[in-house]
Each structure stands twice: as C-alpha cells, then as structure tokens.
Length: 480
Image 1 (cartoon, helix red, strand yellow):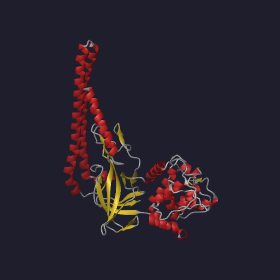
Image 2: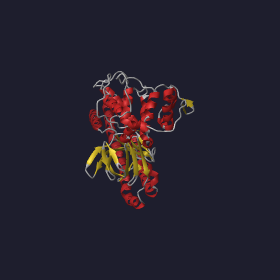
Image 3: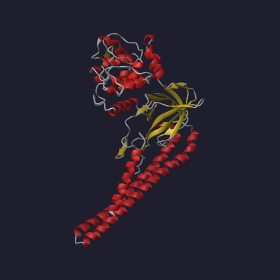
C-alpha cells in the first residue's frame, strides 16, 4: 500500500512539474476563496513567479497599478527592462560587470534604458572604435546615438563599459523636457545635490523642477552619490514615460532632434473597453477587446479612431477574507486597423495606465446576471468543499487500513507494544478525519454565505468591487 502511495505521489509530482514547465510566463490564478480555514484554496502558477504559502498569496513582482483601479495591474516597465538587460548580458557572456541593479549604470546600459524608454529605433550602424559587431548592447547604442539621445566621444569611442555620472544622466534627461529652472547650485528636498559640477547646474535644476526624481528609489543616494544605480535610472526614465504630458512640454527648437524623437517614439493609447473583466469572474487567458478613441501611431503604422485593441488576463486573485476585492493583471497584445486589416504587436511593457472614466454596469444588467454568477460562485465553493471532504475521507480510509493492518502484523510477530501503538494511531486517524470533515463543512458553509452576500452587495453597491474590475465603456489611457 505504501509503495502504491509513493508511486501515485511520484506520478502527481511528475505531472505537476511537467505542467509548470509548459505554463505560460506570468500566468497566475489564485483561488483564495472566502472560507474560514482556507480549506478550498487552490493555486495555478508558473514555474517561478507566484505561489501560495499557508494561505498567503505571493504575487508576481512585475506589477504596475492602474490609476483609479488600485487592484488592477499591468506589467511594470522598469522591472521588465532590468530583467531584459540582465538576460541579454548573460546570453552574451558579458563578464566585465556582473549585473547588479544596485550598481552604477554604465553608458551601454543607459543606451538600452533610453532606447527602450523612448522607443528609439536605428536605421543605420553607428561606428565606434570600442563597440564591435558582437557587443551585447550594440543595437541599442545605435538607436540611442542616431536619435540624439546620447553621443559618442570625439576620439570615435563610445566607452560603453564606463559608469556614467549622475550629472551626465541629468543632462541627458534634461534634453527631453522643458521646465522652468534656475542656474544656481541645485537643491533637492532641502539639501544640496552633491557631485554636480557647474556645467550641469541648469540640467539638474530642470530635472528637479520636473518632479521626476520623486519616482526614483533611495532618495538619500540620489542626493549624496556621484552615480545613480541601474535601478534608479530605469525608474527615472520609467517616470519620464509615465508622465507622458512631458511630450507637450518638450525642449525648444534648439533641441529639435531629441524632441522629434520623443514625439515620434512616445505611444499614448486611448481606448474604450468592450468587455468586462473582474477578479470575481475572469480567468487567466480570458481575451478582451477595446476600441481606440483617438488616432495613434504604433511602430510607424497609423491607426484611426475605432481600431481594435486586443488583450488578455494574465493573473487573477479571487476575492477572499485577506483581500476582499481580489486583483487582476492584464496585458495589451495587438492593435488592428479595421480599414486595411493592418495589425501590429503592442509594446510588452507599460509605463503608466489609468482609467479616465470609471463606469458601473447598470442595475438591470447586474440584476439579470446575479442568478448565474451567484449560482456559479456557490457551486464553486460547495464543489471544492465536497472534493476536499472526499479527499480527506480517501486519505483517512487508506491510512486507517494501513494502521489496522500493521496492528495485526506487529502483534502476531510478537511485537504487541507496536501493535497497540498502531491500533491507537488508527483511532487518532478516525478522530482527525471527523475533525477535518467538520472543519470543511463549517468553512464551506461560511464560504457559500459569504459568496451570496458578496453577490448581493455587488448588485446593490457595485462600486465596492470596482477597484478590481474593468467594465464596458470605461475609458483608459495606456502609455508604452
């Protein structure tokens, strides 16, 4: 019996490992149902991103909140970018500097951040004496320099592996914005900004005036260190993307080259949803559509008002006792021009997202949907409770049989003490099975009542669950 159990466990483990190996990236579905003891919790995750321990849901790291919807998330641009740099360096066996997001950013890494952050693309190959054709960041260096975001040295070198100072980073960022600033020694948060030479006073004051620095982690190091870390610069440029209104305050004609790049490269997508997504009812892999409410250009292609945007749900956490609203994470995949059937992929990461016009489904729609969603939620908890009871019973019967068998074997082989211990264990197994079954019944009953109350609350006061849902006709602004 025990051998059979081990073989069964090994089979289940092998199947689980195989399933994880084929799971899609970022897919997480957490069934944290509102039961008293978590007896009906189930979790489907990818291989290394999210899992459940003791009833606690540990979420994926790359999350960016959607403004006005605090439990709706999209991919975080800055964190994904750091991952991209790390993986590219590892793939190229780049060993001059082991990747550490806390270490000073290099010129090559800044080129990646800027090119990705402003969607700069290269059409020709830049020639630098110290950047060979196999250099890990060559294409990004080409894009950053051709777009005027960075320049090389008069000697013909780029010095890709050289750390870039905080002052140089500020001078680069200042080219992309236009804020009123002073020429005095820069002061930030009431403290003098250290390691800023006089030539960088104006640029630093302009970056400070823009308010972008408040999004940069470790403010003390922003003020006192000579260098910014890779993580800090990624967040700084991410904030530049997020504050997309900067495109209306770009530098004047003397900076037209950089300004033109920024206007061309910035992608601000305004859409109106056609489907409803919610932590209560959506599942990982659910597709949704939206229509553009303003014309937009993506990857050089024009898309008029009414173009179709397609996306999918990539993470769900059901509402529960610890998180009453639950949460969802969505991804925007493609945009299609219905006039000519032109379709392109949208950028994978997002700088910012906001719901500009929050809507609630009307009362009649909520009322008509209630019998179906309510019944489904109740059936889900009841079904998982029944399955849990069956599992407890099956395991208990198996263990009880093993222990009774051991009682006879040990007693008749002249080990009566061990036989009595096995008999006692069989009684404990029965008691534990009764206790676990009673706990599941109480827990499941509570879950059913909770789900019914939650559904009724949604019908009467939908705004209470609006933070974890996206509704039809809600208007969003997505900045890539």
